[in-house]
Image 1 (cartoon, rainbow, N blue to C red):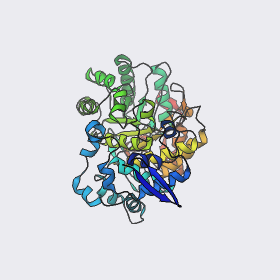
Image 2 (cartoon, rainbow, N blue to C red):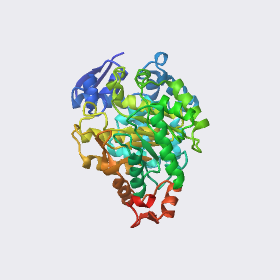
Image 3 (cartoon, helix red, strand yellow):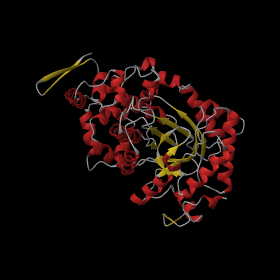
Image 4 (cartoon, rainbow, N blue to C red):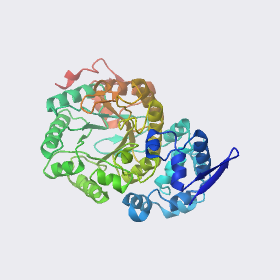
Length: 453
């Protein structure tokens, strides 16, 4: 069904609701590559204006991918509380935005409508919000989760310690863990991307990190980011994993390219609650990123922001401990420069929190993207103001295995100092007990990895 809209005396025609959503998106090279983006700023403004007047009921009745042929759509729609939805369905997207940005709207107020929203509604309101809008509303929302410690509590910011090694050398990995912990990061997870994806390698890294965690009584969790089936086989054979990880997509076809489906994710969640070494109850870790579906030719003609929102709707089904977008990792074909990466990062954390998941980010870029370390540091500051649950940190901001740039261990310490934030409560107490911090401030011992030798 075509939609026409006149603005400034010019009439614009959009072939479908999905087209309105795509053309209302901020400029993204991924949408341009897919051939679905606005052809001009004027058309983008017209699409935003049309979208702002669309009702939530219209978006509910017209999911990005039809209910009958996509299990991600079914997960999202089946989770909607009909009683809450009935109260909201006549709202326009503009009215939803006004509700969210209103000074009187609290975290409790947002929680009261959350289960009446679909991911398409969340995507739609995101498209008509400014960067400052996104930061303002995200900062109102608190989302907590617990594995071996608790993340997301007010006044805290957490960090994943990512000690990757290009040869999976376990001692090198542990050395990087020592350094990261000495700077006070690692409360979100000690998470390693393995070079070799097999049960033996996954088990070796899990055992080494778990032994270190237990020896030094670190209140955190470990995870090896092999394919989910590899981790499940390792855990079933006795490997000590606290979290189970998987990259996910916003379409059934995209998840098929990742080698997973809803049934497998459910099986993993059940296995994790039964067999993982965490106290829980949250034992799943998901990773996403705008453009992933397009890169796998599984985007179904839908824009990358809307698909990203659907990733979070899917993740929510499994009560995760961590979800993060790797915002600049996929490359300039999807997010061209620092401006696009920044916008996408703000969108992603907002959309994740609005859907009630503990949302973090890898504020990162690859070396062929038109971005630099200042862009990533700027994004980290903006998203700390927005209340992101956690960031990924790597030694010196340079991941030598995945060959991309991110935030460093030092950046984590700086963010806490800049915003007067602490680590997750249990981890914060541990940092004080080993003398790395005093009253939340790094001591002279900080940055010395020999503390853990």
